[in-house]
Image 1 (cartoon, chains in turn brown, purple):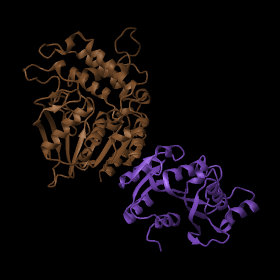
Image 2 (spheres, each protein chain N blue to C red; image 1 turned 120 degrees about the vertical axis):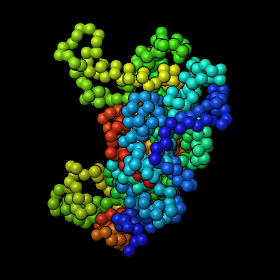
Image 3 (cartoon, rainbow over the protein chains, first blue to last red; image 1 turned 180 degrees about the vertical axis):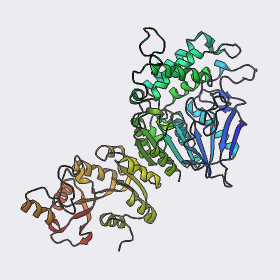
Image 4 (cartoon, rainbow over the protein chains, first blue to last red; image 1 turned 120 degrees about the horizontal axis):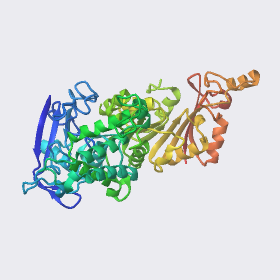
Length: 363
Length: 198
């Protein structure tokens, strides 16, 4: 059964890579399925940049189904009749875990006083939650995209905490191109006058325009050219001829605007700044003496990596790079590149081969 | 009867893999050999397979298999990372069988290689009297669609192993799914299995 709107108050201050510590931090999480007596059936699902803990239950703001309901649930590949699934909002985010919109000890929102966090800091928070729940070793840690970075970070830094590590459409480091797209998004937010150096929480205004543009730019990177062409082509939106103006003449423009504005309803602009920064800072090899294989030295976990042939955000070469390091470390690793038309977003969409790989790996 | 429920060339390989060792099965297909070795020899088995559908089946049965091309991706493995490397019925499909053999002997302390023998009498007679590329029981696909781009005989392989400085530890020969003795094997063997070291 599903347990909703759970909150865990961290007992200790959370030490951060930047040298500061986060006091009084809270982690918001959801669980699905029962934990067995010896606590050996826990599966931690790590969410992506703009994801949240509502992996298999309705989003409280949008009312939309959970973001991975096709994968997680009774009888699904991640079967909640068998596994106790945990999904927690990462610190820095805005769905209940401590982030820039949360109140600092002085009672005011942190805003830009929130410390810059890393992927490893997010995982520290998740490990603190597992400690609190008394779960010593996860059956599996699963993540797609930024969730995959967290799964890799957990495997590298807390190798005893997960027996299986499933990484989908992810990478061990952000490339220059990845950072570049994120910088476009951040600059769009910061160029919005309503951003006000991040101090917009007490005002009626918020940098929705900037955040929407950031989402629009990022959304393009989640899709493939083939997918965009198939879905929209050059078709016009609700009109028969071009307007010779700057309305959303094309369907693809209308779609992106809709995606952008919808996103501002559920996401905090400052969280977007902090989380994209954490992703840009991610370089698992750098944390381990410049050699990715060192990150996994001595690991007993089984790994499975999946990439998609049309994903140009985190292309197959990035997964192969991780596989190479895992091989060098002597780790048990499986890898498959799946064919899918929808680019990076393929991991969230219907894909029977992905289902079989996920289900098989969790056996 | 072998204790292994496998194709004869795979069964003879499985029988000669020591318990508790590390094995890389290159071109592992659906993982039949790996599964048997893990179950009956407690080996730490890894696989490489080009076909994603087969990789998916391997992962689904709990095997550690990486989708990859043996022609290019063996370079990713450290020297002597495995006790055994296994290449079954794949050498003759390699872009450069000589280089692949080098990689097998670099990555593994020992290598098992199995291949169809092009000098089997059926092949020879088909070519001699038919005047066309042989289509036989052991080589059932026409020349224009076969994956076998580098046909090899027992004698050729023995020479290649020698030129690579490899030691032939053991070899086995098969005809009609049964193991046969050494006399005139280059005429009589449909398939050969070599165990090499360097």
